[in-house]
Length: 591
Image 1: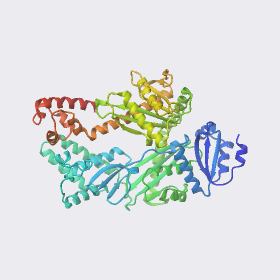
Image 2: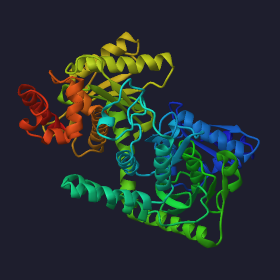
Image 3: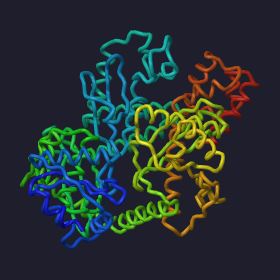
Image 4: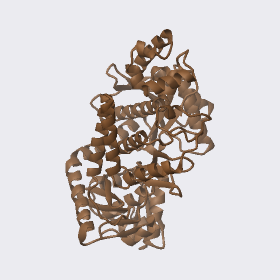
């Protein structure tokens, strides 16, 4: 079919782009020799993912470059630009969290994503933490043990953290430099791997709380102590040279490649990442492309140790780190250990990953066939107004059947919390008005977590923005078991039943579960950030003075909720105490 066109392809390096019958780029690759590589697709025996790719190729294009490095960089840029369906699994949407300590203008400690922060004077970054929960838990513990600044901005008077002895009142008080120096030294020592001072401090606090008969607090601190010991135990693999490096190896079998990355920071193993990919053409090319994309979202360490099969010189130039291999010593042992972990991951997960890829790909095509349209991008919306407070909406994005988490969006809602129609209208207007202004990517399909009310709101927004003929809208309707069992076509308002045994049913359920999870998670985050202040603000009769007294006495929403009406009435009038008690009971049931 492509015989004449293939004859014109030169024996030169470059990047090639495969297109489907609609002219959409479905795969981007690179080659030292474009003619040999492109010819291999159409003249040799292909299997697995490559066979599926070839069956959809209606045309191809190529761009000649002056070197393999240039073709590699071009390939990565084109993948980022077009998100081709057969490259999409190479993309890794996750950027890992780091713990950031900053002294100026006030000593603070928080979890940050590497993409959102740059190393600069006065900032210390520790990570990456593969487990975000571990990073948050460590930060919460250190904030609890040390009086760091925790509030945002610069209040004109000391905030609630000062009254519960978790801040030194930096905003309005002058704090002795020696106090900050001592606190900083202990925190940085722990984050650099010396846990002795922190464990000693925790032990002292546990003994103190036990002596004061605060057994519940002592128990919580003991749990934190046990957790810290587990975390430090996992970091016992050491190289003793304090160099930040990644160690990368792989294992290939049955058309899948398993890539294992060890994160070594300051000589200690902080964590690991595993990625399993179906191979399209050449698994070495796939590994190199994955690594280039991975390091666009994550910190590039000083040194990356890997296997000699990869083009180390090209990767060093493209990524900006020293790629090297080793043949002996502890580094070689870690490199071999990474291969062992890659092999185990592939063997343990091969069947489930294969089924998941087949199910996702098949379900996406099934949805296209059902709606009679080509679908590259799906936006899905959900609203949350649990307990009538902090009304929010969330949007998740799927591209070619795969979640695109960098495109997820969160929205605080300004309309009445219980008005689902205007909530959906406000959020979709903000989303697509901005997309038009910034010439951003638009979806082919919008899936609303709901029925006709939500569809009408979205359709009205699209009409106002002139997008009503460009974007399809459907509603996902749940059955009495909270599962998506039918779609509502936004154009005809007809119901489309979904076979509960089909891949499409599970695909839509995953989308609906994901948008619901994402929105609820945001809602809970907002509530927890301002939970004490916001809850007390809802109770008539509780001003700033009484609010501070309640916080000083109970310290948290949970403990306040566990208090009796009589205990609350020791600080506020009985009528206010009764209202607060009932409000807290209802609130905590929703948590």
